[in-house]
Image 1 (cartoon, rainbow, N blue to C red):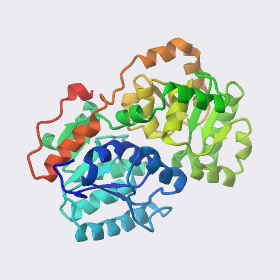
Image 2 (image 1 turned 180 degrees about the vertical axis):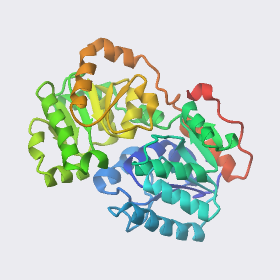
Image 3 (image 1 turned 180 degrees about the horizontal axis):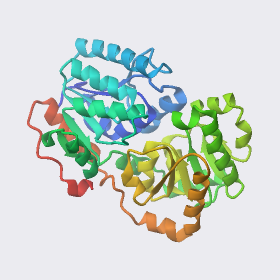
Image 4 (image 1 turned 90 degrees about the vertical axis):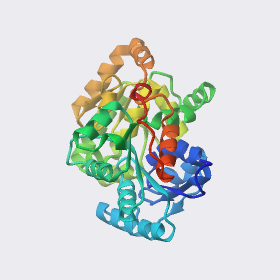
Length: 381
């Protein structure tokens, strides 16, 4: 923003979803944004190509972080960020979500007494087996400005004793990300034609979380359900490199024989495929939010979710195994009326102005001004 000096707001990120969710905020901040990529999940397919697609400037990259164990990732990123912040302290630090990169950014800001903004604060799965749950709880405790996506997220923060004056209900930046990057109808039609797909007649799936891919028996259970569904309708799977490696190591590649396997999709391509899928099956947190903007049904394959707002109407939470196929078939049985019902519902994640709200609040924090009254929960609900 024009009121802030150049490179004065550090945005620390390390994964593709963070790039997507912070893209509009980075654009609004303009020259004030100093983007630092920890390399937590960096490769050209998953992050590099996204920079061009999202129209983002080249970040400053850290080294020695990607592919390392969690503790090493956080420690290496923290040490590198501390050095950067000591040499050139930003006026504020922004982190998003619950990644190791976000935790490292929060700890680095706290160590240097720099104002910290947490985008997407207050998410809770109440599942202590999830490393992300620990990350998000710690970040929320450290943050000076907690940008909660929904009133329910705010309520969870208040229940944990966090002060009301540090919390703003802003909506979720995913809404503007989907609206900005969903290709027009003509382009979507061409993409579906290129893959031989008919709108509302195929299943789109993504699988990448360790809880579903690291144990061969669990991975087999998920893929077995997808293979069975592929006998009933086309199943499209943009395959994460990590998941591909786990499938090959477990000797499960044969379960993909009838599945249409694609390389990792660009964001616009994925949104286009998701917009016209009869059902989605995924373990992604971001997909739970995106389907509420696209108005599509989702089967979430996880033990728990930190996004219960999506499960009220759009998503069904199931564990790996027969529940996956049963939930998909239940959604398919709703047919066109079911799709029309979801398309008519508003997303619980806000009105598409979260990034602008967060930028305004960050500018106040970075400038040392009092943060204006909490953003109205009515427009963000």
